[in-house]
Image (cartoon, rainbow, N blue to C red):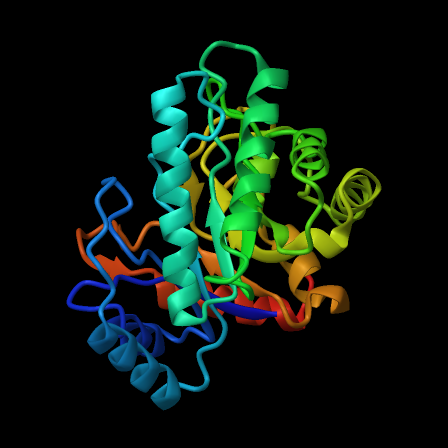
Length: 293
């Protein structure tokens, strides 16, 4: 697997490559716009050229993935919010297409009215339309549904939810999945042991199909199995532990897949020193690529 982390694009999208190299990334994940705002600043030709120049300079960092805005909610029963969410996701996909980025991950949404079935249908409706309308603008970008922990009214915390979305959206090959370790653990899938990992992956294959997984978020969890809480912890320092990550990293079927950290960027030591944690977590993952705890 290729391992990396979410990198800041402050000062320009191209800046993420140098930042990724400095902490030891082999792949990076970025936001192409603010993840907390609807508005998106235009990507200019100058931006594209700077990005491509940086990419050609940092050839060891590949592939790049994009995370879409957290505001998007395709499950919303509110037509205005659904339409706004769809338009925002379409813009995100097209921006990824402009940059030639192969994976875009998004949170499927919240069924705020409590009707999961209707929420899943709305997500699928949006995805089916999105695949059609971005066929020319982002033909090589996979639109990845992120597995979710099920906090509140979130959808996507059951593998069956993912399967329903994909099926009702038409199953196009550009529709894919981003598997988040913290999220599936918090949702109740026990991946702490080798047996648990194998059973969970078999369940995913039976329900969704392993071929749909195109990228990963590697996060330990601050809360225990089935908590339905979304709190990321440093690798091996949470309730999941190291064995899970070793299983993913040593599984040959994921050899070409990117995995990105979304763990806290810094940590304070007992004496008050602030340590940059991406290099620490990446080093832990590299160790686990070679050995089982």
